[in-house]
Every structure is written in structure tokens, then in C-alpha cells.
Image 1 (spheres, rainbow, N blue to C red):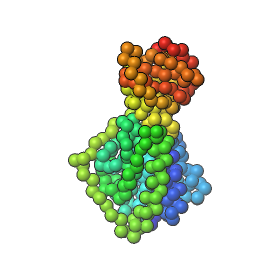
Image 2: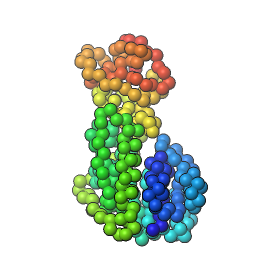
Image 3: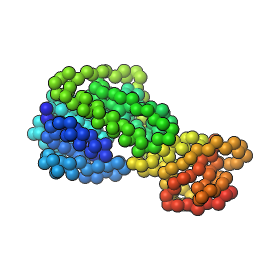
Image 4: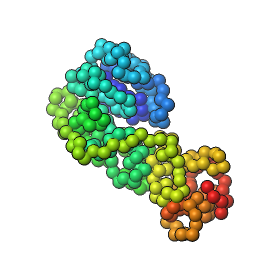
Length: 293
């Protein structure tokens, strides 16, 4: 069974290595040289060169040139893991076993963009690692493997990212031989249960001190590494917040944004509800009790 692999993220890199480790016959790789919007970007050509696998740099994978290259590779199946660009109908029709996509969410719930970030930012307690057969819709094809992933209140984005990736390894090892011998079970999605998350914008990463301490804490967790970090602006300068500690202050006559105490250069800020201690801020910020952000 010949596999073409498409991807350009850290997750893509790790699942490509797992596919090869589990005996997958990867005959071609499509990736990108860079990315202006993926902080966890990874160029897969390094694997292609080390394993002597033909590879192609693409921007729009649906161009005639790229499609012809893929047709010459003649894959039986395409693995598209970690790819936020459009896959059109002509590409879907090339491999006889279809294109297997991946989405770190419990499909049909939470289709769309930035699922790990939105999951943590919204304070959800679980998500999933889901492989599915791609169709012309968005994350709407038949599911071939779905595993629940639990999320703790202390988890940051890296914790969830790694837990999802480790689950994906096990799932690939399970479904790879079943895909080859045509014994893979497929489950249709119930579209009536679906929702769709939008693309995140820069504004979504800006801390508003009128938010509750819980919402700010979740936002910081969601945008921590490998992502871009939540931020606030103080005296026309941007500060990234990587770690916070949520407090339950009941200081009803303190305005949001007020520095209510500073311990070991870690300021505690009054929020719309509760307070938040800033543990790791880059660049370092030096605030005094009574100041306002």
C-alpha cells in the first residue's frame, strides 16, 4: 500500500515518523518551506531527504503541476495530518483508498479551526484524537478512529498537544494494517450534532482584565507553547503571558486591571471576577502595587 503524506506541522513530523516506524510505505511527501501563521510549523523535507523519499514543496496543493506530480507517485492512500489548507475534489479522487485526515476534536463536534486552542480557552474538560476519511466538506467525512482525551485544569497547550500526539501514534499503529487489508470500520458523522469553530484572530489573544480570572487563565493556557502566547499592552508595549495562577479574591470595590499586590516580582491583577497572578511574563515587567494595566 503506497502512502503519500501531506503536512507541515510538528504533529505532521511526528506522525510521519510513526507511520514509517509502523511499516507504512511512504512513497511521497508534500510539505511547505515556511508558514506565516503556524507557530508549530515543521518542514517535512528533512525526513524525506534522510529516508530518500521524493518530496514536493507546495503552496496550493491543488494546482495542475502538483496534482500531476501526485498522480505520477500513484498513491493508494493519502495521509493528510496537520494541514489547514483546502483540499479540492480532484485531489480527493486520486487515491483509491481516499484521503485520511486528522482533527484533534470529538467529531462531529468542534469542526473547524484551532481546535486545541479553542478547547482549552473555553475550559472544556475533554477533547479527542480523530482520524477520518476526507470529503468535500470541512472535517465531515466518515470516522475511522476516535479516542477520548481528558484535559486537566493544570494542562497547558503543550500538555494537550503531546497527549493527542501520543494517542495518534497508537491509532495509526492500529488502523494502518486494517486499512491495507480493507477491514477498517467506518462511522458516518451525524451532521446535526456538529458545530464549527472560526479562525482565531490576533484580538482573540489579547487579555482584557474585565474578563474573569478563570477566562484569562484558560486563555493563557490555550495560547502557551507551542503557540504564540496570550498578551496585554502596557505603556504601548506588548507583553506575552506564559504562566498564570488563578486566585479567588472577593475585592468587589477594586477595578479590573489594578495591581493589588506584588510578591517576588509576580504581580496579582484584579480581574472582572477574581484575580490572576502573573508568573511568567516576557519581557519582564516591573509593577508596583496600586498601578493599573
